[in-house]
Image (cartoon, rainbow, N blue to C red):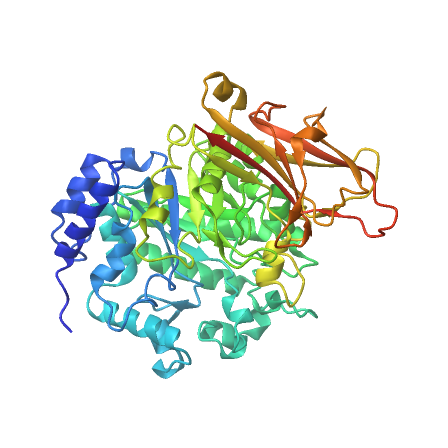
Amino acid sequence: MTEPDVNSSRRGFLKSSLGASTAMGAGALIALAADESTAAGDVPPRAPSDAKKSPRIIYNDDGDSVVTIPHQVPMTVHQLTDLIDQFAGTQVDRYVYCLGNGRVAHHETRVADPYWDVKGGKYEKHTQFRLGENVRHLVQSGFDPPATLGNRAREVGMEFYLCLRMNDAHFAYSKEGPENAHTAGSFWHKHPEFRLGGNTPHYSRHLFDYSHAQVREFRLAYIEECCRKYTIDGFELDFMRHPFYFPPNQASTKNGVMTEFVRSVRKLLDTIGKEKGVAIPLQVIVPRTLKAGLQAGLDVASWIQERLVSAIVPKHFIQFNMEVPVEQFQTLTEGTAVQVYPCIEQRGHAGAGEDWILHPDAKFRAAASRYWSAKVDGLYLYNYFNHRPHPLCQADRQVLQEIGDPALIHRRDKHYFLASAETEVRRHFLLTGTTDLAGEDRQVPQPLDTQPNGHATTLIIGDDIVSARQQGLLKRVTLRIGVPGILPEGDRWDIQLNGQVIPHDQQLCVADPVAFSERWIDIDLTDGPDPTPGKNEIRFILHQRHPLVRLPPDLTNVELLVEYN
């Protein structure tokens, strides 16, 4: 099969991108238009002065689902480099390419198993066939994906990082079972003694136990191979896909083991960087709280204090979330060069009674505004591509053209909300009923009893409602409280915002046509009381439950919609 004209394809994409946005710097656009080759020569890493600039948006791309599987065999090189070119005109400054699970690789490797060689080159599913044979074709044609994507990223002025998932568990809960999974890898098969194990049905029992030196050495060998072979601007360790590294009853006592491993990675990167004459930063994706990290055996505070890492990405697990407490990480990084990039995960999510609901732009703007108001270094997007068109459609690109600049979203509509604990349970843990991290408290859902002080939640926002009203820019502010099963004909309640009781004539509670009963209380705050920038306490006080109803209602949602003229 003859390769199509790669450059004409890019020029067509560039033309449409220029029409859509002028947000990208002129230098990057010139480089994109002037490109005459894809993977021919190795493009040097960015100059040190450029590498020190904080990226506005860091974008983590998957290693298989959007890279190879959507394309018929054999895929073309421009279908690969579209992963980079689709960001023309956006605020994405750092591209992170996921290497997968490190047991089976989607590129040339001597440490792991090449995907196309697993099971003698035979495949169980069409998706496996597409992935394996497309990568085989690219590699044999001289377009090894990490090398090709790295070259393309640098050609357009974008940083290029490689990412390793430290204990990816997709194979562990696959339909065919871990022993038959295509991505288990020969090292995993040969060493059952290196697995977490335990008397539990949870899929984590199949993952590597980092207590074993051989597991850590296997990981280090893979990292070394990739960092020596490819020209990169940095390397990332993803500790959140999936966050299990030690037996549950030992994890909190194993922090020193993982810290020593991170020290080894830092030393390895320093050695390779010195040989290449460049610095190789180490970026880590970690649990959204320091407490959760310690419970998993990850002493992130020590990594910061020892300057083992250059950037911290605190994130939730498989859920859109704007509640990452970035401030606790910023306290530790203050006075250091370590940067903090809170993660916003998923373009869509599945919740109670929902199926892959698209998050509108107002929610991305709200999350970005909350984090920018905390003076973070930038934003990190994970799984943004999931179940979305590829290359990205303009609706998806629009988010990437806005949220990296606080000024662009300042007076734009926002939709703040608290994440519910039910989402990931339904999607990833339905069989076991186990959440991702023990001890990670959530604000919702919670049952509403009649305790005198009620039930408080905290919503952090970035908007200044008062100044917007004074400037005549405020259209509407609505506080939405989800309380399925509330009974206006017998229940008595009060809702407070920052200690102030909201009058009942501002509250609307009517039957939801989908739920066949009252589910929401909509509160008009356009004329006050006003939410304030930063933390806001919303307290629901149930004074009396209908005397003929035994079960209490639940507080399931707290949302704030801010609309501008």
